[in-house]
View 1 (cartoon, one colour):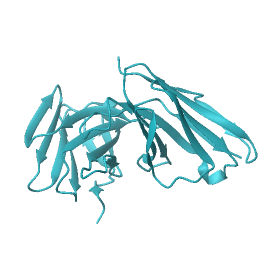
View 2 (cartoon, rainbow over the protein chains, first blue to last red):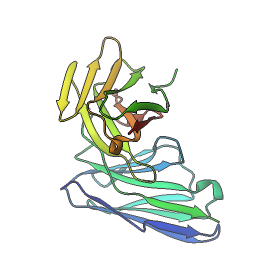
View 3 (cartoon, helix red, strand yellow):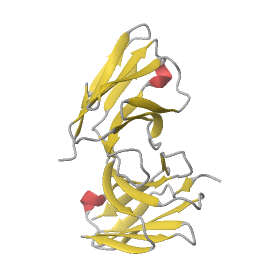
Length: 114
Length: 112
């Protein structure tokens, strides 16, 4: 079972709102990822957690705040977003961060900022 | 030079024919290579991975890797309309920066 579950599937939020995207996996994976994907573009890495510690932050603006409460959960807290932040946000996981481990994606959360 | 390059397409292939998707990468130290399929409005789905030079076959799919030429390809035999999607090539970079780098994707259309 290679399942990464993301909620909500769709989210519309105003620029002054605070919301969160949630991600869960029960595959025992120790690396979890947030990617952002705009239309007709490839996924862009935002954050990587390895063994519940933030390992990579790709210079993401502070209005995006990741959190890894435990090895199965990953959150992305959103605050004061801009319309250009509207995109598909993909959570993913892999066994660990070693080169070659397959990354499995969730179905994504479609975010619209109005 | 982009780290991972793909022809954006669209690539149109008749049903039943072989679709050939190509990808080149710039980092000679890259060791792991992945092909993802992404339907419109959906998330990427892993199709194949390959680590060693040569061919790797899985059903109608064959991944080919040539590290000397820094080239990886995906062949889809007996193409079906359901194969119409964007195919993303992804490469793991090494040297302490373990992150997956994606190409821009090739849009494939299978014509019935």
